[in-house]
Length: 180
Image 1 (spheres, rainbow, N blue to C red):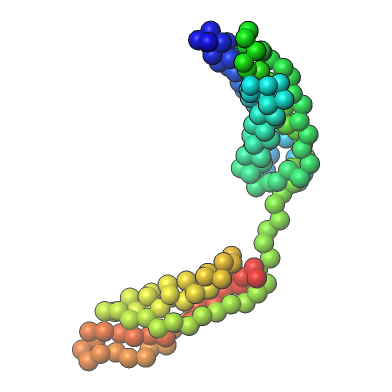
Image 2 (cartoon, helix red, strand yellow; image 1 turned 180 degrees about the vertical axis):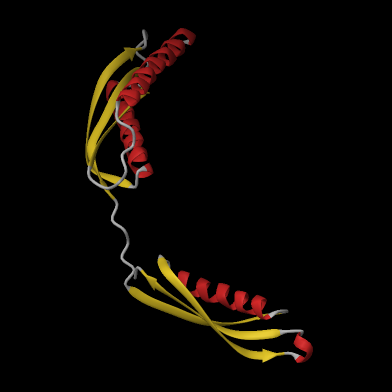
């Protein structure tokens, strides 16, 4: 059993070395401006031929998707090929190397078309602290809808100032353009 495990590790290292060579030969991550053909190679093993192949192909797909995500892309159409690398002498493990390939496309930017706003009251020991507290609460109200927003703006109106300036209260309105 010890020799079987060692052979599996050797086969995985061999497959990983092939993957590293393929990565060096492949072009670097292209910027996400146009469709990009990408490829990734990984290894995997399992107790049956089909499980070993499936694990290697899943690992290759995951590596390709991670590579695309780093470039701000998604890969809608991916194909995989796999090669049997090694079988343990007792038949307990099957090692495969797999390559996933596909054309990856830039992820669309979200459309910020829905105006949202919220008004909250904030208090603090200075006008800046009061406005900040109201602003944080109003932003939280907008983001509680589970949306992404951009182009934030804040307006504030004084409501009350304690004698001697010990406490300030402001109405704070926060506005943004959101995805929905």
